[in-house]
Image 1 (tube, helix red, strand yellow):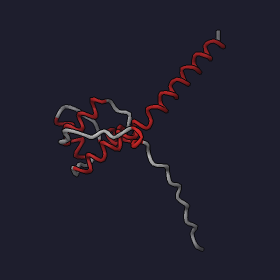
Image 2 (cartoon, rainbow, N blue to C red; image 1 turned 45 degrees about the vertical axis):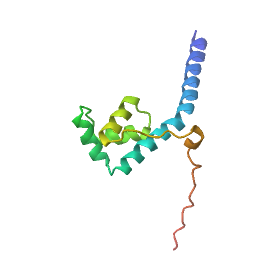
Image 3 (cartoon, rainbow, N blue to C red; image 1 turned 90 degrees about the vertical axis):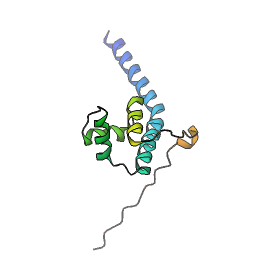
Image 4 (cartoon, rainbow, N blue to C red; image 1 turned 90 degrees about the horizontal axis):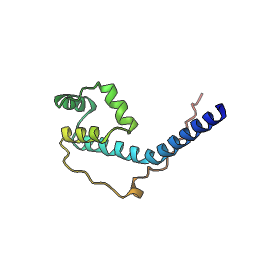
Length: 113
């Protein structure tokens, strides 16, 4: 019984990781898309919190920052944000252009003694 249970748990965990890996680039893309729309309009996180509050979406600045940095928010939250910042349309690029650039590893400069 324990053996069967552990196999099921491992299978569920594997499925979760598989789904997360598929969604990760999409979450990263939509996070960047929302941030870029905010920058285009000069909207700060503080201003976004205030504007969301006006339509009944209450959250702290830290909650907003965490939610956006995860990139895994709901479509409803995305639409609410786009609505309050005045973005009435967005362009969705081809999936291949969504792939994040390769991360650049910077060399740490050695301190001179």
